Length: 346
Image 1 (tube, rainbow, N blue to C red):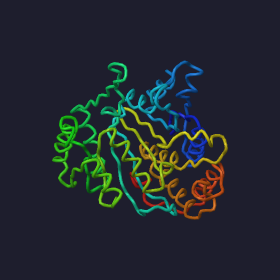
Image 2: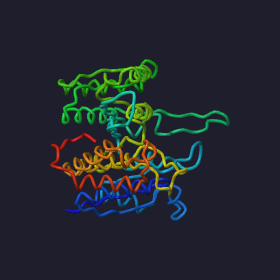
Image 3: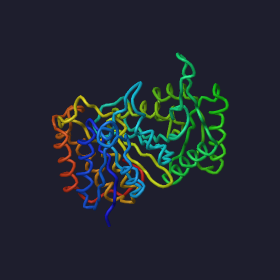
Image 4: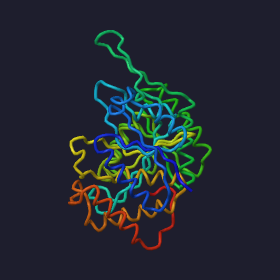
């Protein structure tokens, strides 16, 4: 069987780190058919479209995409490619597991958090306009459909993966209607899953609680903007965005992506760390029900971090992107029998 995958290499370090992930995926022995497309400024220079029609049609056809980072201009220019793709394909669930890798020094070892974020509406969806010169209005749109849908996604994941606790994160003490709707929907869904402990924390208190003791949380469920901010905060527990995978799920397709930036200052120098894209590819393999291959890559990646001989410079090593990738592949080829496959661990 061959898996057809849409590949969006991105820009900056994107092509280097996505190519590393592609090499590792192909080293599993699985068959892939890659349909590669540019997006963002580079696509616009060629096609006068930031998201080319051929790319859209490819995702509609394959229903699975692996994406590298794409630069988003700050304070002007085109809209975020990430946000546009999520809206276009109704990728309502953003999923980020937060877990430590071996020998990455952090203040909190053995963190195991799942961030579930509503991906399509709320303040972060970017619905804003200038009312009069000097006055700008941004709209926070919340719907019962979206709030219920993301809540059910979180509780279903918790049930299938034996997670024990979900906290809904909100600011309903101030935004009583919008965040109040989010909480009502979460509470209604929670009643259907009595085996899962449900709690609610105000977003600012959650930030403090996370920094004081992240181990008190199991899964965090939140609307769009809070999810974007807190998922980056939680990435610091495991070393930063360069180690955290990301997935965006809809009813009909899914896009898996690194959540770090495009780092144009180191592009083309063969020094970027591809770990986040590799771990995102692991989520993709599990989505494709290729658990054995995912476990094989995960074990090899962790072994590279344990041995430390071929780590990239950002974590104290001297290896380049390609050398690090070679090492992961070598560990895969020399790996003993696999541990039991797990549905979520990356």
